[in-house]
Image (cartoon, rainbow, N blue to C red; front, top):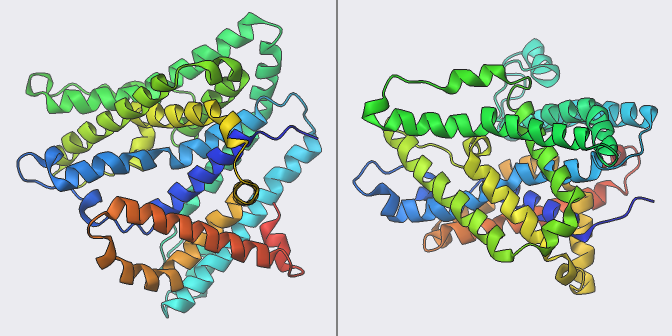
Amino acid sequence: MRERYVYIDVVKTVAIVMVCSYHFALVGDAVQFSSTDGALLSIAGIRRLIWGLTVACVPLFFMASGALVLTNPLFDCWKWLRSIRNLLLGYIAWRFITFTILELWQGTLLDEGWRAYLSSIFFNGPATVDRSHMWFIPVYACFLVVSPLFKLAFSRAEESDAFKNYLIALLGILLLLLFVLGDINCIIRYVPQLNGIDVACLSEFSLFTTPAGMMLAYCLLGALLHRNRHAVSTASGRMYACMIVAGLAWLWMRWGIESTLAGANWDSVFLGYYSLGGVLVSTGLFGLIMKLEPILGRTPKLMSKMIMAISSSTLEIYYIHWIVGYTVFGLVSARLINLSAAAPVLATYIKGLILTLLCLGIANLMKRVPIVNRLVRF
């Protein structure tokens, strides 16, 4: 049986709570751009600075996946194929369930006709419901497809410095082409003397396109940190704290620059995945949680069971939270907006935790129903 790591369970739990917080957020002007002078130091700007922590939500998932999948030397071809098959079948099934329930809820089922309805389920045809969260699954499927190649490289890295150097060099190239160039281009566009220079075209040299390549970088980063977990766990906690603060500061600055240039709000969470700031925040949190594993292992039994249950059901919670968030929980959230005026970021994280626990309960109930339980067993 594969060894279970407490810190990975905590990482996945933090990630899914952040996802549920980010979706259907109650933060109000915390995510909005203010065109007034001193926007960064306004109330909205300060809230945006804190809200930037949420940028780690999806990267943490992929870092945990890289840590568990890429560093495992065992490989079963049939098991690998079944995992991809089950992921894609679940993806189609949950698209059908999500679109049908939400269109019934808002009274728009078949408004576009049968052809459009089926096209929206199996492809990306017209849909009257929000399906923006579904991007995660195809990207994860891409990671699973290439994972055997990188598993081999990681296993050989134990024996050969050449493979270790290859992995480090590849990660460096991905970080440069997929993350740093965007940040550099942001600065260039903001400085009048550099106007007209565009370095973003250099990303065309990347073998992996975004967002699949971007998340592959997070997977490799998570695997490398996990492979060297003794060094990571013994490093100074202040270093990880400084990484988080530096990442938040840059995302905050880039939010101000990008929003000013566009005259509209720049999402420092979703778009922050592609920024070095997102890498710093995610790496800092990942390393800090790994360092705290001895303490996390001594948490009360009830909390430990809850964390393990959430960690084991993140994909189910991910699917279910979209439906719950747009239906009954949406009605409750509307009532909470007034209550969240004083501390909207904190209220949003509390809401995310409540939504996570609610969806976990629904997932556990579904596991007890024959046939239906197949939807929550991937």
